[in-house]
Image (cartoon, rainbow, N blue to C red; front, top):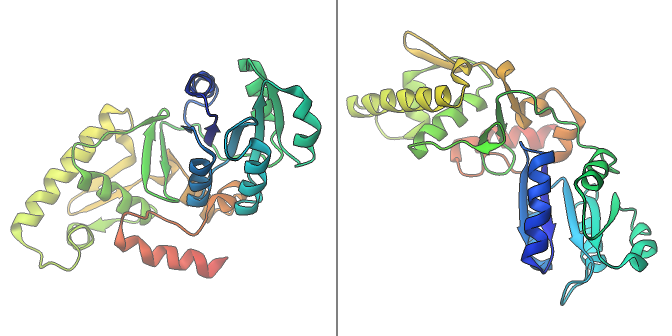
Length: 263
């Protein structure tokens, strides 16, 4: 899950983030100290749950919740506060939970299991891939580190192709765009493939890559991916799509245009 924690006290943020990482090890958890930063993250899209402190400066948690709901109607709001007298006002906003500080792990777990808008995406395979927004890859919940940014782009393109085989010429044209294909680029591509293969093997996911002769592909059935779930019309994946797909790659714009046409 993609979860944000908004509180004006860093210690409170750190405490809740530790709990979330234990409960949801494959998720993305971000702490922010201001209401404005929380708004910016939700505007960026694909936030599943927002844990909000109620007593915050400039804009309190109740006001922030209303603002976030206006941006993303299906956002799950969980209030976290040391002031239980706010409970009635909080529940009038149709939130997913109300937790009193100090927060216990079991309380957080129960809140995530009983969300008003349930999150049902699978997270049961070695590799988790997020395509909506920026392209990101996780192995057992930890960001996968690539020695070269173009190795990551190579994997992104293979994911975009949904398991279809790609020739070396197609991969060179995608990564180096409209530049003429040269022997140097072909050699660089071989190095990228080697680097990608090594990175995946070290993460215990080397079997997702298929290579034969002059072609390369991935096995979609061996990864958890919001894009693939979207194509299978899984409601949680459809709800997570906010009009952004692999933002950092220009070649992904055509696929994104196809999404918009389907909605």
